[in-house]
Image 1: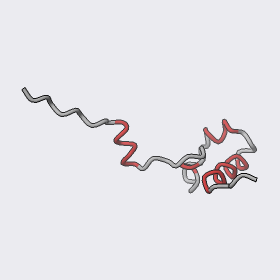
Image 2: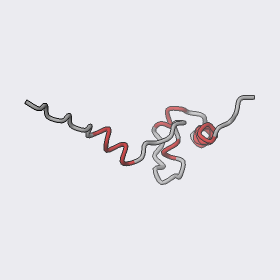
Image 3: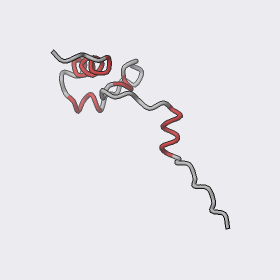
Image 4: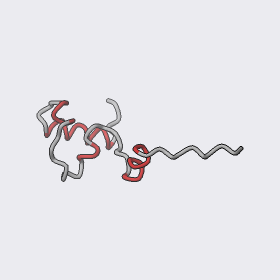
Length: 64
């Protein structure tokens, strides 16, 4: 039997909550649920990481 990691356990709980419908897990409206950020079986990005991905750092100006 494969090892059940915490993320896989959360994913299975979310699938159970949504009657086994993967699309419903993706569209889950329960954002106040403690497991919501982990529902897709991956670690959610920290708020600071999300901001970084929206605003990539600027390249330094070339010296002339």
